[in-house]
Image 1 (cartoon, rainbow, N blue to C red):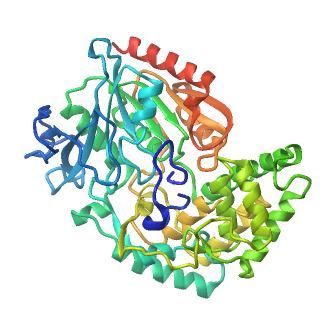
Image 2 (image 1 turned 45 degrees about the vertical axis):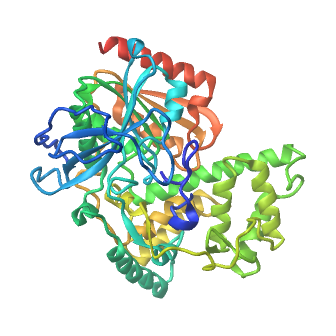
Image 3 (image 1 turned 90 degrees about the horizontal axis):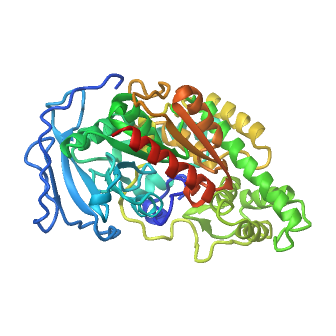
Length: 495
């Protein structure tokens, strides 16, 4: 999920205003998929004339230059795959050929993290850890240069990290969210209700066909694993190796989603507390870290901490959010920040009063895409109360995962889950899927990968890395050796 982006690229939370931490049923035949046009003579990518056409050119992405050697293209696909002759949407495609084509091992189709990350987000890491493969990807629907979902910024900023549990405020939130969703738009307009994982999986199959690739490999990270799972279920017979890291479990109910995420974050806090007790470099060494945390939350709720956290005023929820952001990358920074918060000081340099940031009227805001794939709406104030009771039981100190609970507020209005969105993961590939997880992940707890492994049964190869963080499994030498050996074997067998 968008929570903590992998690698080098992060969502600009001040301008985009707030990803939570900055995380149909049967195949429809592809219509009119033409041969790929592989000319790179044009100065920039231009849309194909027909749906299914694919043209390549140089990249002109303004927000972040692409890796040298990456080509960009545009692929036209139906907005609604159930109506394959309906209006089309132009999707941004990426291709990065292996340096030595004579030794090329195959092609890896990447499904990016998010929702909100560009298709090529993992290209540099994949080239480093799995050299010798051509890399291809799409910007998912509603993201980056694939008809981005844009929403009114001030309304996005007002979405709470945890839904309120008193009736008056909850009903006001439900009304606000209905108004908020009406401000969100895509071009074409119909795409707004077709941004789910099944649709993205069908887009990926259109890309494979347009490139005339008989066999491919699949890589997915975080939210991208959801689309990868649906791709394997629909089109896995074209897949050799598939590596999914920081795995999403589509079968979870809303309550399971928020409680498992809260339990995962509490486990990180427990590890943090043990580290502080042992390490003298910890700013809270010799102190009761849980007591310090609760003091910080009380001062925040009492309005005794100046400024804000990414345009959100300090509260018990933002203190939890601060820990979620800092601890996975640096226990030392988290300890220093919690100490300042407990003293009534703002640990975020440059953060002023809420609302002082210059925020554009409308911004790319991909968070509601999650609502296309999970039924996360709290629905009623009673459900919100029971959710909070369950998360507090699962996480006695932190209280909740702001990343997960944020979506139960966001999804009060927005796209409805696609048909079949909660179906278990299946695969049509002849080869098992490798599922990478960390023992302590702030966004996708390892229990999610365990559940998907149970759904895939003999078609799963679980690999768990003992580390704190979201992703980064391939940076562990032992995990990397397993992945490389698995991919080599899968591609030899798939020839």
